[in-house]
Image (cartoon, rainbow, N blue to C red; front, top):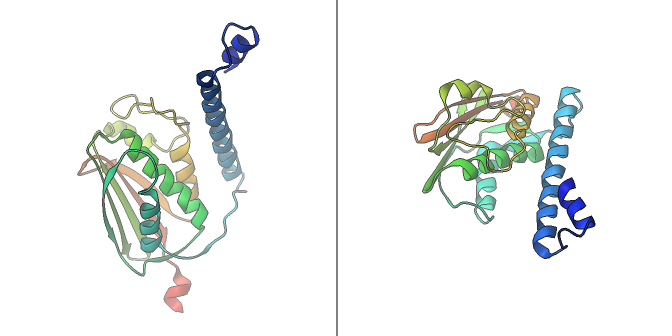
Length: 207
């Protein structure tokens, strides 16, 4: 970015639409990186703000996927099995960040024709969200490291998409902040599977 600006200042390059668009993309990328780093720093300090409220997880995920269907990006065949009445206490905005990250990863890395399968169900005292997509997958030794900061998978799911490498770390931090856990494994569809467990809303159960 500095080199581009210096070239414009020195008259080597002209400030045309293409050059300005390139600079705007770099600014957007840096802005996302700084915001991602800020969120992780707040999480490390235990200062990431959460506004918990009762939330029907199946309905919430369904609305998110419905809203995302109209957004630009790779078209996905989406299959859902979303149980009703699986209530948790969650911050909807933060949970949106988690789902956005998972969806972006599926859109970036799943080869055409891409399929996404999402399931929400009750499992004992927890709500379980399962997110699976089609190939390519992730090498087995890389699966436990996917939520590490700045970790990149060199094989299959290459890093040519322009992501910060922090999205899954942020998603993991948010899930932990909700008292939950998040685990990656190989998908039966040929791609990546994420299982997320969140505590059920015990207040609703006793209400």
